[in-house]
Amino acid sequence: MRLYALLVVLLAGCSTTIGESPQGTADARPIDFREPPEPKEGSGTAPGCEGVTARGECQDGMAVYCDLERGRLRKVPCEDAGQNCILDVARGAVCQKLDEEDTGSGSGAASACTDTGISETGFCTSAGAAVYCDTTGSAPVTRSWDCASAGMTCGVGQCADGAYCCGDAATPPPAGQCGSLDFNGICENGTAKWCDPVSGVKTKNCTAIGQRCEEDTCATGAYCCGAVTDGGTTPESECAQIGFAGVCSNNKTVRYCFQDQIQNATCSGNKTCQVDKCMPGAGCCDPVTTPPPVNECTTIGFDGICPDANTIRFCTGTTDADIVQFTCPTNKSCQVDKCGTGAFCCDNVDPCANLDAVGECVGDTLRYCTSGTLHESNCAATGKSCEVDTCFSGFAECCN
Image (cartoon, rainbow, N blue to C red; front, top):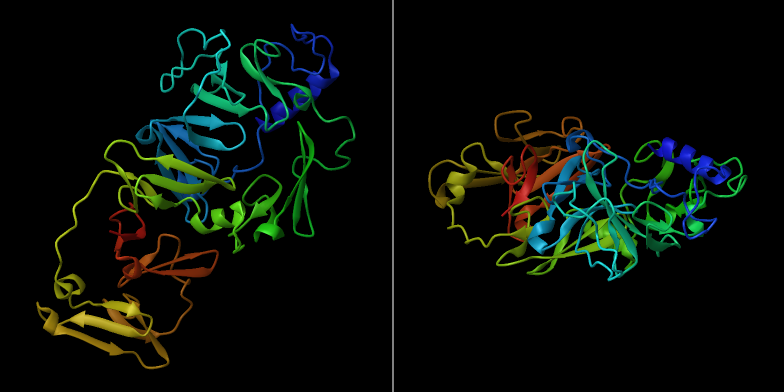
């Protein structure tokens, strides 16, 4: 689709017979042509994401994204915040409440986009975005394009059939503007460079946000990939800290990151923001009651757990008085189901040799590997317990 859009844009820039705007603006897109540019960001996916990309898609009123780091889906219930899931041209699937500009044109007739009720004609929002129902794909979806951010102006029936972004930025870059640079682009001194079919040469300094410039890994061609390590207070660094999983900025607000932009969703009704409760990461969940205390001895059993890398803790009876704990020798470490059933002092081995992104629970410590790197989280430090296939199907997670 991206190559097709590029071809059509270039043809539109060279032709004088496809059609002209009814307003007579030579720099506008031809009438009846509505194919917004498809960004490079977020085209990657992972095996555990069922084909969903990092840009995401709308499913049953939810914005669904692929968490590339953990190889799993993240779902944000837009309806819980009184919003709709919209496919934003630049950011992908987002939760958004649309405010139609009072232009008198309206949003048209009945809509194929039954989830939002927005027609194919669409409308311009008061913020200057073009919103319409796109029926060109396998299923109708509601699309939004922020015209002001693209250097254009939203119009209904001016440069396309229905709501669309019109203006200079809609024309393809002049011939030779990108030189030998194509859409795939290159990595140069830690910076990704490529030719955008609409705006020309684009650059993204990967080193500045703690990422690596890679080709054909997390996106088509050159792009910034890998975990962000920037520890400052910029939007990029806050995104690196909270990620897709997000945090609760207060008991009614979910705050998370998508495409280097901080998103906020307000919980509706009696729902409150909770972490790893009704979904992986922060989300709007129903109120819960505190579970009754449990007997540690019956929880850890005779198989035992590893409270840390050097300690074995198990129970020989039924009460907390029957709990036994000891430290492994210096040349061994506590491992669960590796050299014996349950927790044992085993020879030290590569922790990622038999561990992947699915992860495991070593006591209340969550352990998983991505790209040969071991990640560990002490669930108990946040008042949670590490459990497998409980609060997230098929994965080890810190659960309430």
